[in-house]
Image 1 (cartoon, one colour):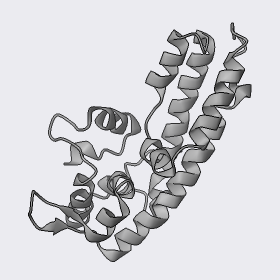
Image 2 (cartoon, one colour; image 1 turned 45 degrees about the vertical axis):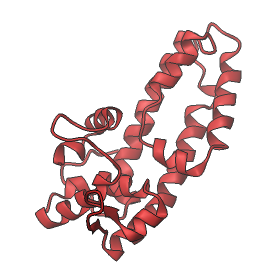
Image 3 (spheres, one colour; image 1 turned 180 degrees about the horizontal axis):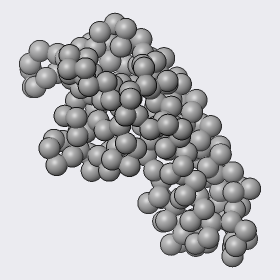
Length: 196
């Protein structure tokens, strides 16, 4: 299970994109079990990622728990972890909105920009993402947007220079948010957690 909840952002990004690791499939429901396992075994580096995934659960699942298997008993978080998730959800949402505003700032255009429309595209992306559905912003907070940005480049809404700049900034912003995740989830920062 530890392979799905690494302390390293790049490893997390790969696990998130692949919906798991070679060792196991990752679902948001696994996060409740991962929190319990991390607490029982002292593997604190699993907690920030597992609690973040719990934030993504439907509120009813967060409060009532998730089934261990079909029609089986439910895996439930302790009350203090539910509180962490509710608070963390708000903190992650605030950080995600700040990242979107920074990432898609029209002033982020590359000095080597070859398209006049790049600034307009960034402005439109900023508006679309900030007007988005709040749970979607939480779900996507720690996912890099490179595939989407490269699609804008292929359709010539962004030039290659601007797409490169935005992709690089996206990774920096995601890593910065990842570094802050223990703080956002109100847990101690694990020793092997990256610094901002």
